[in-house]
Length: 375
Ligand SMILES: Cc1ncc(COP(=O)(O)O)c(C=O)c1O
Image 1 (cartoon, rainbow, N blue to C red):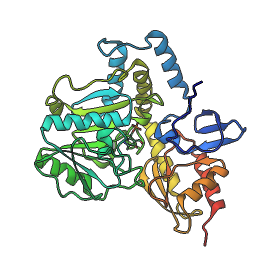
Image 2: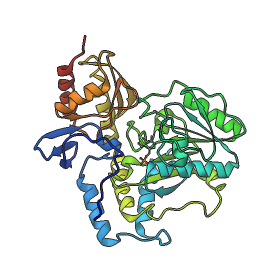
Image 3: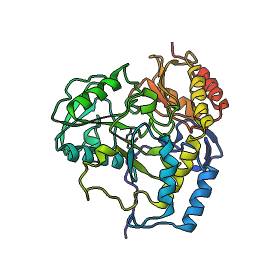
């Protein structure tokens, strides 16, 4: 006799999901639910997006998989689709499978290129669960030992960047930490310090990238260009993919033979990412993200919401201190709306599909008004 059960890494919501379409979740019970969490930012174009479905099906039939040793048209198509969306500079990209892997590659490259041993990171950060990514995260996921020396600074602090530092890594807006915006001038000062000390400035754009802030990248929103950045989550419309971008002059310093991934840049993820790029290239698509963001801001003062943090569709709803985020998210679930929580117990995270219908915000507003405050 043998058996198999799932390792209990996640505490699941009650119920079983039967399917999903766009920003709607369909439960086996027959209940429909508005999804304002977007599968942790993965469903950038909503669930089951038709253009992604067609691209994946046709790619699979034409060429389902091939080794990274072989060239095929999908690689050039992907590069051509993303090139016009890049921040200023000459960039190179390496494709892997997840956000953590994309960050691992950035950190490895910076440590090897600079031949230094220290990485600066920030309190409240989350960069993933693998060895290097968890070393620069601020949580219980860290391994017993870190693969390099870590210098963790308070958010907003720019002290401690010196000639021993290989890289400074941060999320331009901290998501898991509570949707925490960068203080004014913080990113520009980090840029200046990194340039002065020869350290790489690395942006983790795994949540902030791919149009989520209303421009393609946070570096464009904040006007600060890093030496390297990562993205993942919604970049391929729901297909697993991680991308590490590095500025070409820094890329030339990375030793040969230290980078690779069997499934990295597989034809399906390249095809999904090409569809996402085509959406981002339409000005009205990003304009919709910015407009929707403004509509969400009208929720300040509705029910328990006292403020809104973040940009675009990476928003943190700050709650009145008489109610907790876990209480409000539970009440919203009961009202048929899914939102996220984060490490700040007073903040709800909203990260819906970028093409969410505007009317959905009113639905959230009605539900929040029904919850009210506990005074
Ligand atoms: C900012 C940030 N970085 C890195 C990661 C890790 O990505 P993945 O779970 O794809 O490894 C996440 C995932 O939530 C994230 O939000």
